[in-house]
Every structure is written in structure tokens, then in C-alpha cells.
Image 1 (cartoon, rainbow, N blue to C red):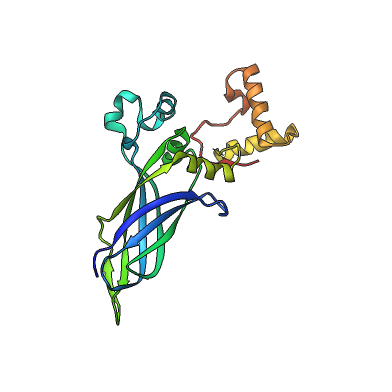
Image 2: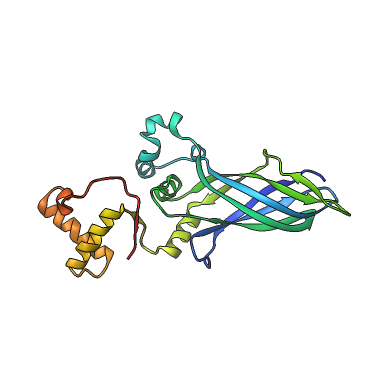
Length: 231
């Protein structure tokens, strides 16, 4: 069988998925006459941040990932985005398939913070392929997908924003440790607050009046955020 080639034709948000999902349209082709019975495909998606420019506002939002802009020559390294699998149905010559990629809007994840920081333009992505090809006429041959197979994708930032707005319209995620979440629940219950938004606003107002926020949760230990809250 002639060697496979991969091309990413585009990407769109899956508006009907139960969770945030991007659909990458792939064209897979082989110039040979042999039929491909199926491909057990694996794809690693990587963000290539050095392959685009950034405005001042974006640079400031990316400081926690890459440091000050003066250091970006050494810190602007690729970021792991996702790793997914797909069974490609049989074809001869060429086929097109959608590669679903579940996403997170969790700002504790480096990829999530990167996407959140961008205002417009495109996200430079690299799709790295591996897996197994089942091919051949009159029988099966098992052939590995070469590790050097890859495809470039320039995903519009607007596609990511559309996806997040579909599932989290006008909002985002906040992750907190369990004891802090318990303290928030207790505060919300004591004050009969109708939502998490009202709870946070009440706490911010109290912080402005009383000083350090540590006073809001006597006995609580400060630590990095790790738990999500929902309204």
C-alpha cells in the first residue's frame, strides 16, 4: 500500500455535543489502488504558540504561561492540547472524516489559559498522527501509521469562542479546594444567596469593607484552586 497522507481541511465547533467539542475535518488519502479496510487512528494535538503574533493585551494575559515578553525567545514552547483516537471506516484512494476533540474551559489547564488569552486571529495547531492501518486486497495487511505523519491547522480563535459560548454563555469555570467550597456553601446558605454569582459578589463587597480576604474564611488554609463551582 502506498503511504498515507493527512490534511486538515478545517475545524468547527460541534454545537450539538453534550460537552465542549471541536470537530477537525481530515482528508486521508493514498495514491495506490489497494483498499484500506480501516484505520485505528491516534492523534496528538499540539499548540505551536511561536507561530503567531500577540497584541499587548494578549501578551499580558499570557505572562503566567510564558513569562515576560522579553523572555519569549526561550519560553514560547509547544503546549499539549489533546490526544484522541478515531476508527476510520474503509475507503479506496481518499476519504474525509471528522475527528472529535473534547475540550475543557478549565483555566487551570495550560491550553485553556492559552485559548482564553487570545482575542482574535488564529491558533497554530499541529496534528501528529500514529496508529494502525488494515489494508490489502483479498486479505488483511497490518501496517503502522508512520510517526512522522502530521498536519497543520490554523484554527480561528472565533471557533474556540463559539464553542465556549455555546456551553458557557457569558461565563467560565472556577475551581476551588473542597474546604473552601464547603465554606462558600455555608456562607451562601447563611445569607440565603440565590446563586454563586451573588455569593462571590457578596464576598468581594465584604472584602472591600474588611480588608484581607483571609478574614472571610477564619481557619481556612490558602492553596491553589482545584475544584469547580457551578451555579
